[in-house]
Length: 457
Image (cartoon, rainbow, N blue to C red):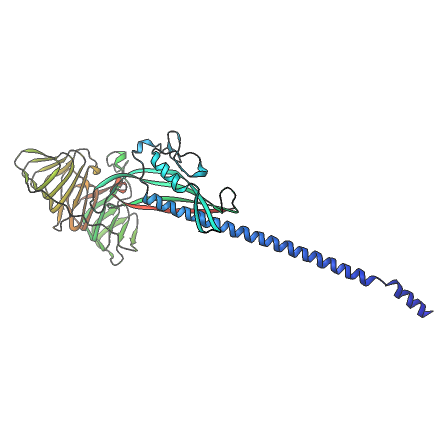
């Protein structure tokens, strides 16, 4: 009976091994399918990433070519009055200023030749490594900032009108073709040109600055009217040197004080108030030399109580003596030596640029800038003999003398910016930096990327 019962139990278990085997095969099949699907998904994801990365490289290549185009094939548009800069982006004829590639629609730009050049350079352009590896990019550029300014050519010191611009450039890259891409990416960058003024601060002595007596150095904006300590006074009246700055007296600097990497700042006596703090420079500031120029051979002298007008041109020595009045009519002058002595007065009747070669001595009664605008008088001095500036009613203008010691004398108010090999004072002059100097006589810098972002699809 026991054997029969055992046989019956064994008979009931027949086929269970087959079921278990089938279940194992099912699990293995499901697992294998999952692995296959996962692998296929990973392969597709990897391929998509690969193609999007390749599209990104195409888009980035297009962006780099755009920066080169703006630096080598483009000049900002003039006149500035064609643009409406009150809007963001900048507008022309009621629409945003746009240089368009294929995907950007119609260009909106004052010059058709520029718009055409951009389209030819950046509409559906191919970058190809070989027959199996290529891509296409196209670009659009929107003008988001336009600031008219004056640049200076450091080889000639001739000035020219142009503008500081900021563009938002969008570069779309397609791997293979733009009509049927297998990868797509987009790079958006902000690019901007800029300029470094040769008149960055109120006072700059390249090798050193020494201040004594009682001085006030601050700033103002001539666009807001005359200097006024209550209503038109700023805190950009900085003092700088690639060397050492020393103060011996009661000096208030409403701005910063910057001294050179190998120099120092010392206060020998008195008191100093420096609202912008004292900062060591990480590197010397560069000031380009005044380029060589040719002066005339004819002297122009005025003496006694005479009054004389001097037209723009080239001269040997220009001299005002006694109680004479010398009037510069405006324009560009090339002079070997300029001197104003005794009670002589020099008038600046219009925007004037003086290139002085050998000697500059302005110790007369005053230099009167009829419009009271520092922008109306710019003096470039290439000599090495010391420069002395003095005047009783105020000096409006900027002086650039990178190879000569400069001394500001008397109780005069000086409005503008003053650069010398060294800068010092005698008496109690006050200096009011013209903040407009930051937007004039700029050394042009190339377009460069200032912000950058990417999207891949």
